[in-house]
Amino acid sequence: MKTSVVCFPGSNCEMDTIRAVEALTGQSPELAWHKEKLPAGTDLVLLPGGFSYGDYLRVGAIARFSPVMQSVIEHANAGGLVLGICNGFQILLEAGLLPGAMVRNESLHFVCKWTYLRTERHDLAFTSCVPDVVKIPVAHATGNYFIDQAGLKKLQDNGQIVFRYCDSDGNVSAEANPNGSVDNIAGICNERGNVLGMMPHPERAISQELGSDAGASILRAALGCVAEKI
Amino acid sequence: MIKARVVVMLKADVMDPQGVAVGQALESLGHGHVKKVRVGRAFDLELDTNDPAQAEADVRKMCESLLANMVIEKFEVTVEQPSAAGVA
Image (spheres, rainbow over the protein chains, first blue to last red):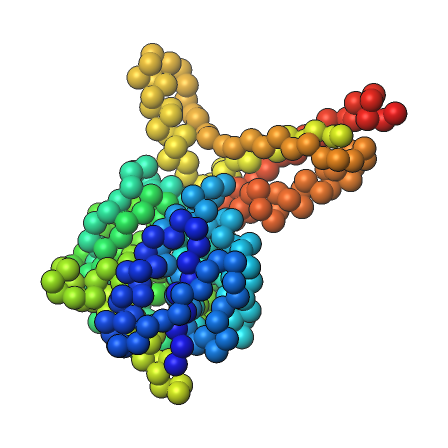
């Protein structure tokens, strides 16, 4: 089993992500620098949060053209698992691995708080052991997911909406939406289901001491799936 | 040398929270007659070519691949005719 965490200039959650993987598996993932290719034999790619390339131009827009992303795209197209968290999600959108785009939060504020997510699918590598409602924090200024009506219908019809912002009882409501995202979308996958992007940070919710261990269920699912392959 | 200007704006159906905030600020400054503000981004490019048609085609490609996100944004390209010195 091999997990690689990609680091761009301006990433700032790569160490949290590495620590989370270590805590859950006892093994250290590889760190892939943006100028390199993915380490050979990578099964799971984690794109961490942060502000890659200073968020210049648009969030994730420059990272998309980095050498490492070319091999992430090849990995994804070959069916390999990719999980993009926050800035990682934004990069997946810019890279075209996931549909839609991010715009500034409706409030124009940087939103940093706990959110509840309703898990809409349990059959993905990332969600096989994730409860119906999970408490995971968000921290972003540009997490307002946009897709046009035709695109939204396609996401809904294909079951590509994986997480939606909700209240603690699992009710999806406008009040529970922290950023104005279309249809309360917090995370989506590609049609094949091997690429997942989500704005909330599962790596920041891996122990009750930190307020929630629900994020561990997502990472454990992805890591567990990788382990099963071996 | 040919100069080109690219203006990138959010599409009409994409909400522009920045534009709303700027509009509110203008209103608080006493410009209550401003009914709508949309915020965009402009790029000035200098291209080492004397072919305006080619320059425009190249800049459009740049817009579609990097300068604009075609999911949420639209762009306009204005190409300046080559200067007399450039033609010579």
